Amino acid sequence: MAAQLALTRVGLTKDLIGLTQAATGPRSVLSSLARRAGLRAGVMLALRFLQARFLSVWGLLLAATLCPPKVFADFAIFAALANFVSIAALLRFEAVFFQNSDRLRLGRAFRLALAAGTVVLSTMAVAILFAAAQGWLLRGFGALFLISLASRAAIRLILAEATAEGDLATIGNSNIVQALVQPGMMILLIWPLGPTALALFAADAFGHAVAAGYVAWRRRRSLLPLMHPSRWSRAELIESGWEWRSAPTYLLPSALLSFGFSVAPLLALPMATNAVLAAHVALATRLLEMPTQMFGAVTIPLVMSDLRKQQGRDRQRRARLLTLGMVAVVATLFLAIAVVAMGADEIVLDGTKWGGLGEVMAIMALFYGCSALVGPLQEMGALASRPRSQMTANALALAAAALVIWGFGSLSPALLAAIGLVSLARVLLHLRLTWTGIGTERPALG
Image 1 (cartoon, rainbow, N blue to C red):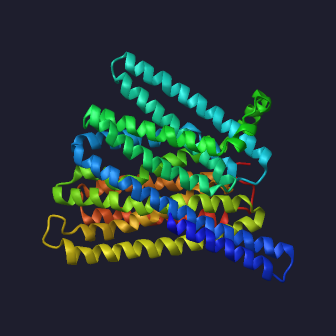
Image 2: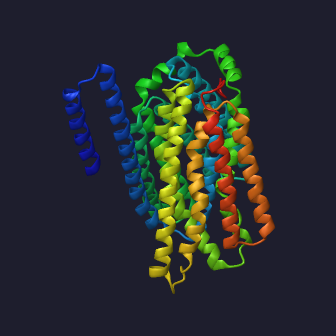
Image 3: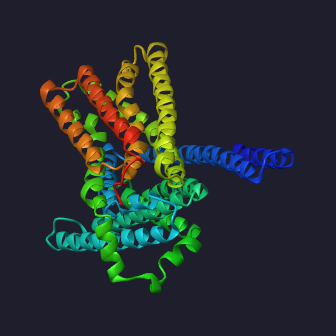
């Protein structure tokens, strides 16, 4: 927080000095200020995300010491299922927000995404009630899952609108709010309910609900005009749904396939014959997910907000420049992680039960580095002129990963390396799409 305050003061001072010393025209001054503001907003967003991670990790570690492993395993399944369904809740209509800077078009897309989310969530509510009536699901767990799912969908919708409008402060602060509330509630609920799955499920639902309420309150001045009753029209929804039908038909399957590929290393765990290697892979997965998520959380809002302001060939040139920058950052970051992991393996972990973890992390760094890069490329692909290419790339990668796992037959470092190579091939396909297919032809969502 001190770093944020210092950056704000320094940035303000530089902007004022730049204004008094500028010898060029007003357009140059505004352009210079925009570049400085964008860089400073990106740094501030990264700092807020780091704060959120540091705030949440201590609560999770404390809860992990209080709960048995099976409870945490059940919670992991709960969270993964909620994340998976939340991707489909809006039918990917939120990707339309970034097509251009037209506020009226944003309003149409927002109302369409909200209507689609309402229909999907209502369908899920009916399915949960039916499952509870049949005795397949406890009503309490079903209610918590629905709350968590609805909150995740609301956060996805509102943060997409905030990203499109360049409100990076709301995005960063929402991470901090959730990082404070969810682990705190987790610990507080463990006290009366005990170390049970119910406590973790309730904390997840409550944490996401509070975060959804916070972002809705922060963006209320922007959202209320978009949702005014006078703006709703059945004819408009039908027309918008037909115009942007590529979102549910191509972008949604692509996103779901990408999510499935992201858990490919975990799919090989049931085939492990070496329990120590399986433990190393599980721990390496959790450790490498953090920089992967951090890279996506910071770059996706910046990249998509920036591309929304560009059109035609300017957007394509900007996409290429941003792509080169992201490739350089990801290569540097995950190469450093691999080197540090190998060094720690030799110096710290050698002779312990975790000896060899560094080697596993170094091998898996390729997979997670490529996955980190695919995150923003996946979002950029929503602006491309060939929506099928993205879906095809993810489908081929998931099928190839399944074949590789089946071919090896058991978990091994060679299998992890092969999955990493499949991930590299997938990112190359995405790079080809974003390098040539953005801004040069009719947009995929037009």
